[in-house]
Image (cartoon, rainbow, N blue to C red; front, side, top):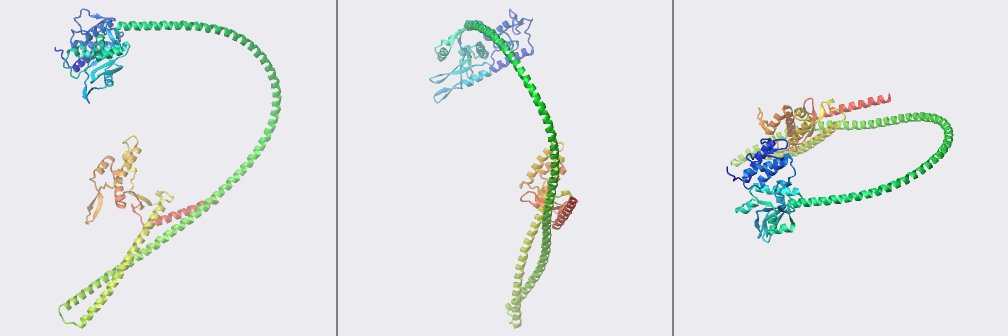
Length: 626
């Protein structure tokens, strides 16, 4: 089987075996303390302690030059599984069999073959922050990344810092092993000629530190050479020094504590002596205070007894006076309440009487005015009809006379002998025709005057109808008491929407209000006009709802016939009463017959309400005086 694999294939291969180890497909544990490598069946030493097995896996995946990439990938998966799930001993011994090998400290890694591009005569590449974020996502936890620059710009190299502790060393070795598994280690970098865009990297050692290059310069400026053993010895020395310093501090604090304890004992003895003297003084003082309190108590008891006798006597007198005062106040309050009640009733009666008189006067004036205007309008209509008949008869006479005049003139043009009688008749006809035309002109002028008066009268009637609507609308009676009401033509009825929204949401009322509000907006949209004109049986055009309108069809399907009928009724009312403005208009309405109420019906209803209110006021007034 060939070992030439791509980086992604090798990662997938490693992940496959790691997943198999997690799932228990490979047996590792032989006994309580012994483990076996599942990938080295021909090895001379088959059983390991857990720490030894971890060292074996690290050695094969990192140091073995004879092992294939697939074998290294398997052992890398084994190493990750032991580190993450079996919790072995710290990892500082496993990446290197040679603890005396020199590394650059603080632990650093070298990244090579960074892709650069020429810009403004200098080589540039991605920032060190971007590389640090990429390495952090892979779990290497670098502290920072320093790109290396020379006089030509970015050199294509960068130094990765991993910190000064052993955790940083472990991260650095993970960084090197990961790149070696991908065939991007230091050896691969040296041997490979066509490196492409792949990143190469390794942990900085003594040969890199002493190199005469930009890398060696940076390492010598920012680090030293140390082996793992040196680092361990140095840490042990620092720990020993720290422990020694802590011991000295502890001895010093112990001596100080003893001195403080001695001073405390001396102070405590002195304080105990003072407390004894203080207790004697307090005892003497308490005895004196007790005697004085007894004398004061006896004297106070005598004063209290006298005071109590006086208090009881005064309390009896106070209660007697309070009872008298309470009786007086109660009588006074009752009298004041009755007086205020009578005053309020009197004012209410006076105000009601005044308002009733004013209402009576307004209603009577309105009724008389409407009656007179109606009679005058009827007379004007009859007079206008009679004038129209006279005008039509006059126009016929004029046409007849013009015809006769044309005949006579024609006879005159035909060359007949002039006849004195015919000429006189023509003159007479012309004179009569002139009189008739003047009369026709006067009739037309009178007709225009009557039309203007009719329009004015009609406007006055409309104003009166509006005032009547305002009066009925503000009348303080319930709408259900009469068939004559004020209806808003084009207003959408909300009740069908409550029925349609029932069971369609968590809150039926809220959903119904939302649907109703949306359709009120649609009804007021002039661009939406689902009305068409059709001919009836007599050939007259009338307007009806267009049932093929998409919005209405969808609405009928979703909410049902009752809500659909409410919307179409409101739409037809708006089309009849306010097609241009598309908002609700108040109208006097006969709710029993479902039609527009006449002015006469409205006045009759207003008079009825006025009479009822007057009777109610009389009844209340009589009840009050009773």
